[in-house]
Image (cartoon, rainbow, N blue to C red; front, top):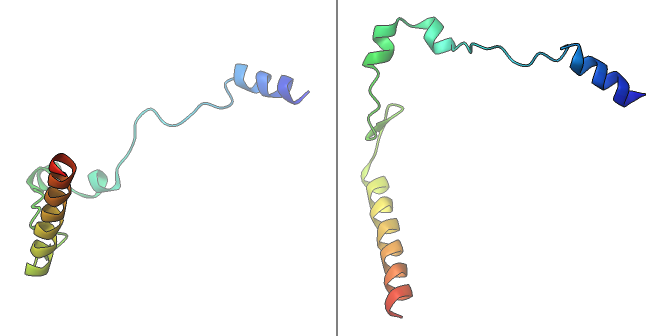
Length: 75
């Protein structure tokens, strides 16, 4: 009985799905020229700049990956 009811609902197109056109709050709130001017700078991430400690951690992670690759390749 449940399967028949579900099949009837699917054939009747009661479950129509989501909207065909999606809306964005940012696009609705700002004019197109503001969105085009928004350039993402990886050094200035959400108003925070990468400091010396962050740069050190990036270099340290690269160094550890390099050491691991050397050990895997050369033993």
